[in-house]
Length: 576
Image 1 (tube, rainbow, N blue to C red):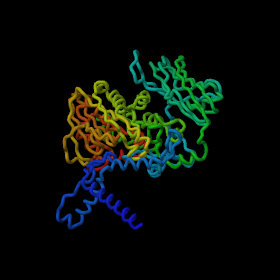
Image 2 (cartoon, rainbow, N blue to C red):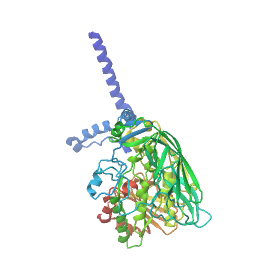
Image 3 (cartoon, one colour):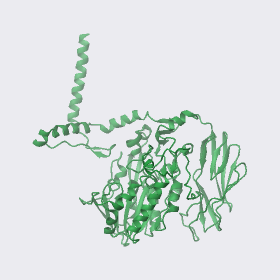
Image 4 (cartoon, rainbow, N blue to C red):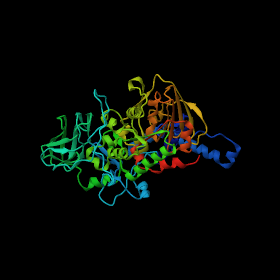
């Protein structure tokens, strides 16, 4: 027995000795892909730091921070952590609660900013609160919502094209077994195409799903859309393009324009195996939704915050003496297009918020319509599956919409050079869920660099000091840092000088969604300045005037435009 104890002690002593030797001789990492940061470096010796104890403390920090295989062990931890959360079929939920999916019009700004809901990282946050009554996603009383049934024309046609003008929705007829007409507006000419966001929807009995229905128009035609559900015993139209599943079976929903142009969608209705209080309890405890291999944050926001955003943009215009074109680009996030229908009640309508901001902007501000082109191209890889950002392709369509609004040249994507970073894993894995499904399904990060135009880039710290030159596109790790390919991250003041020769100068105020936009505009502006509203420390108005800017673009996602209201107003008054 004593011999066995000695053997065990000897074995463990050898193992400990081997691990100690390995930790001393195996190369230590200098950068963490998963945490997107440089790791601690070995401290430089000085007598003062040694006597103060800092030298030995820094050595301890160095060895703890640079353990060989650090990212491997973090991934292993993620595999274990992936057992957390609730998976219902192919969908997994983190932090989704009964207050998700709410656009509020609260009076208490403080409450709106501090409610406990999931927001993406880096303060790209919306404001969703805990209402006293049943959550709803309707517009505030003072302004009627823009109907979702029309779509601005985004492709050229052979005849003159005018922007569709929406009117207040007409009262709907009783949605039982007969066709129901949704009044979009009244006019003449021709509907070219009826576009619906889904070709097939799986629903549980009792669920409701609202279709996004849009029209491609020539001229200004009658925009009435007739909704027919057959058989009516399976599902029914309940108004505003919403369908309620009544019984198990299959149904066809047909959307017909007044000139006979139509499109259809099929619905399969089944019983919900997880129906009842258990599912509701799970949904009230967790925060991100993973549908298959795609992770996304569910949206909630505040109309009051959106009004503050709109007011701030008008203040910028006035403070710049009306001499600078000011643009609003509100970018929808992935859940606007890819949220499973059965969880739609936890995901407020980003289309409603985008339309609300568009329709209530001051006439001084130019609206950049990005929801429509993204909606039309939603079957392409517009959003990253493992990250909370859009993809560079999604940013391309938004940049194109901005160039058209600003009246500047814009190059087709075919003229850009594409670059692929393999096996990208983004913030939805590393920063939030560490879900093994995401870990085992990394994605390609494809970005595009312009050709035919020269450019140079300089950077400064947020306080305006420390200027240095570097590349605009900085290829990053294939693990967690690929989105930082643009400008190397968020916090710097960036200045790009180009050979465009248009005489136009652009300032972009953004959060990280805006990082992917500037590279598409090198052929449109002679100078492009990029500042992040979360880090910039100078007075914005003074900065813009010093640049001689002709154009000012606000490019933020819906969470930011309807969320942290102080981000936009602070920049107006802060002193350097």
